[in-house]
Length: 250
Image (cartoon, rainbow, N blue to C red; front, side, top):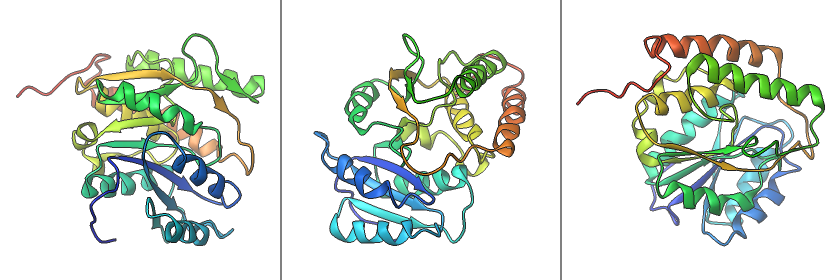
């Protein structure tokens, strides 16, 4: 894709795979926000025609852009490609967001307000109680256990390190060697936060309400869980077994 001057300084990245049913509604909501945003849809060659629909939406709305992957390569690869695109095109506030309505677009203004004084803003489902709708108890217990597991092993003091609703300031992504990010499943969320946190950059959390998928099917799998269990220990080793930030000396 050719370089262009972004219409807005905020970019919402939405990876998609078989999200045809959800995409038009999400685009409508994002473009109706009180703050102006651009949208980058990254489609993993969805067999249900999500990519074609994304192209149609981009024709109608100049704020919408599309990246097409030739095959489904995983969440991490989709985000890495998107981060590189966002940095090249000059965006300042770069969001991760799910396409399935589990993340509420109405939370974006509070992310942007928090990002004025932070390098990374995490949306937390667990600040001041549990803010999750439609999850069975087993799924909730797994999520809470994962958050505690990450916090104990890495030392990161965040209530929801595995969440996927985030706002990166440009400088935080520029501080990470994106080609060295190894995770490809949900541990990608932990790895990106850890690489920014261990450099001493400022990370804050804002409360969100997470709603389980309204349409489509969850993409959680045993392989994703196993990758996350192992990757957390690797991150501890990368930080020289330290559970505190270790900023590089100038």
